Amino acid sequence: MKCNELKEMMPDLALGSMEPSAKVEAHLKSCTTCALYLKEMRQTMALLDEWEAQEPTPYFDRRLQARLREEKAKEQSRGWLSWLSRPALAAVATVLVAGSVGLYVSRGRFANPDGAISAVTTPAVGSAVGDLEALDKDNELYADFDVLDELDSQNQGNQQANP
Image 1 (cartoon, helix red, strand yellow):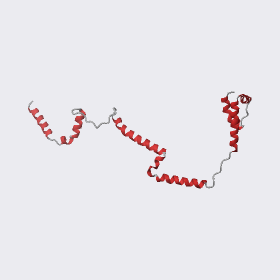
Image 2 (cartoon, rainbow, N blue to C red):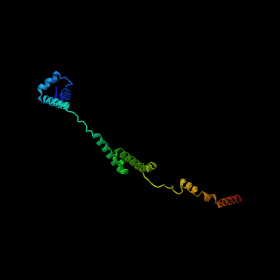
Image 3 (cartoon, rainbow, N blue to C red):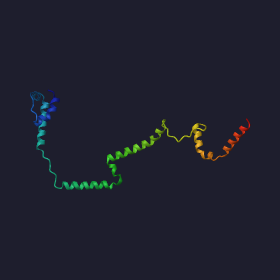
C-alpha cells in the first residue's frame, strides 16, 4: 500500500467508521509518517467531538434587527444611485447601453454593404432613374404647360400640309 492511498482513507480511519485492513496495519507499522498523521488526526477528531458551539446572547436578535434597519436606511439614503451597488442591475444596465450603442453604430452598415455611412446619393443626370425623378419632381409644371401641346399640334399640321 502507498502513502497516498492511505491518506485518502485517513478521515474514515480516524473517525472509526472504517476498520483498518491487514494491508493498512502493515503500512502503519512500517511507515512512521502515516502512523503519526493518523494519531494527530484522531486527536483532532476527539477535540472536535468535545467542542460545543456557543449559544447566542439574549440580545443577539435585537442587535441583528437593529443592524438590518441601519443597513436598509443607509441604502435608501444613497438616492437614485443605490442600484449601482447591486451588481446584477449594474450589469444589465451596462449590457443594454452597449447593445443600444452597437445597434446605432451598425445600423448604417446594413443599409450599405461596404459599411460606409453616407448621405442619400442622387442619381446621375441623364440616367433613366435621374430622368424619372426629374419628371416626378416637375410633374405639376409639365401638366400645366399648354404651350407644348400647341407646338405639337402645329408641327403635325405642317407635316400634313407639306408631304
